[in-house]
Length: 336
View 1 (spheres, rainbow, N blue to C red):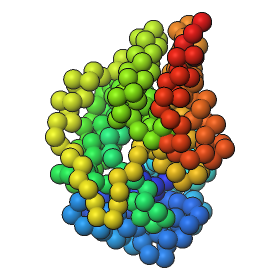
View 2: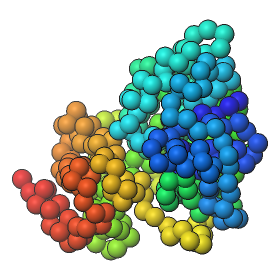
View 3: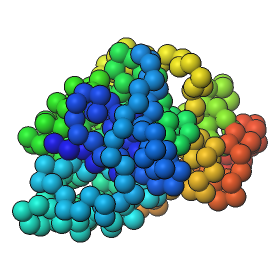
View 4: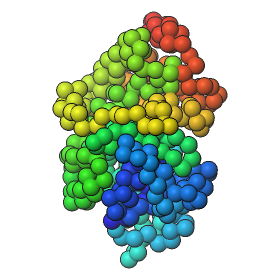
């Protein structure tokens, strides 16, 4: 199989680089300076063993590839807010032997949240979800880092909306060759919703610069409790913390990488890079949406969604809001 990584940033670049290291065919899809660096100098992947460089085909969309191959796997690794434009770009691409990508090829959603899978199922017949546990950072154009060892990450994989098949097992086997653990599960959405609860802290980190302080952790406990109440009211299952800890164990240990300070999570990285957008609508905003649909108030998640979007839109510096100020606003938001 040939893997086309649509969005070769921190997560996509790491998965693409590790697959290439394992001898699999990989095409990277990127844009702007990142694409220029990939084309000129290759993908530089900083991992615990050393910095690895891969000279892989790099394109800005399906056009340069022409007709896609029947054994292609599309790996969607853009942020959720960029999903629709990516799906529109690739869905109608012709595949050798007839038909289009949307009709024939597997699409793997390697993304946070749960919305991308729903968006993909509107357009693609064969959609696979992944619960992404892969610490990685976009360092600079052409360079990504992943400090996990002995495994680079753990990627629970399954069909959407549910089920497994031979394609999922073949993809999982390739990922296992590439220093990932990739359990194939029939209920991948259950794992994704558990990860969604964890990702509700992304906005706290992006706004205040940390989710590790006592005040930030106390606030996150309130935000997560609100999220759990919403998912419970909606009848949506999610894996327990104990089940997740048992699955992860000590398989991914983070080590310092020379010349590569460990960055924050995906939302923090969006603010640092000044992209102008952030994924809060599909993390805290998912809880806000479900809360409205099922009559459960979610003021804390609504607040974080609003503030994160405002910081991104106004290109404010990551971590520039004191955590005490965020807690004050959260207290006010919960008042009737």
